[in-house]
Image (cartoon, one colour):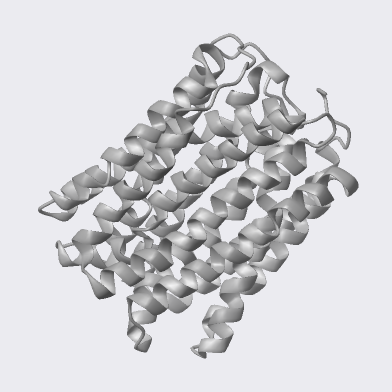
Length: 382
């Protein structure tokens, strides 16, 4: 038991560092892209650009992890976390910056499904939701502290130093991860099981839970708050606040979904997130801070329950694929949210961004509530 806890702790720390290294750039990437010539639309595309590659390749890398080893695959992804930020430094225009974001996305695509599947392999019977809640907590803590570090470094030292700090942080996490060893399940490479309606329904949960929060965290806060007179440190603080509120409820959300079922937790999270997004229509800092908190809180409830739901519906040998599918759904939202709302901002302004994002999230809650009869309460696989 102690060995399992130690190995799980190493995985949680690796997840924390990977996401920390990836999120340090959040407060500055959109404004920096505009300094390199991007307009509001392209700033949105670049902000979520890493997630485009991630969403297109994550299922593939999840299957590769199942076949060739989850630890080996995650180690390759971790290595790219060290290298990718250095390409931001040499980018001379916003197109080159977008390509650098794509490389960062590749690191995430390789690393995330493998690390999540390793956590499932080590989880105890009947505590899968809790285990996924723990890894989600640590990754969200990484996302939470990264923006504050990035905002501070940018304000005090400069933008170039933000990118260097990403690589340094990744190196710090990479060293202990090299010592990690585990006997893991390996499956076959390919789609050898039926991804039925229930599983596809479950795989879409992270998309709906992340669309609005991505719009708020990596696009709206970095570009909207400067119009209200706030600097990089303020931006970093609010983005940290969003991800921290999300992180702190991940384990309780996972446990709650183990106890009362996945779907009620998912619907509750989506409703809370929608309320948070609508609060951004106020220009009061206190309303925006509360909206930030609720947006993160809602995402924190819905996502671990959604991941656990899909994990319930596939066999143990295909957990890498399952985590890849859920993570693909999430990353697609991270890309499409800022990209679509970048166009909306360019055409109609930020008020429409908050209205449309809030309505989309609220309608998602209604859809999952109405269509709940398609989701079984008991897992297909133990």
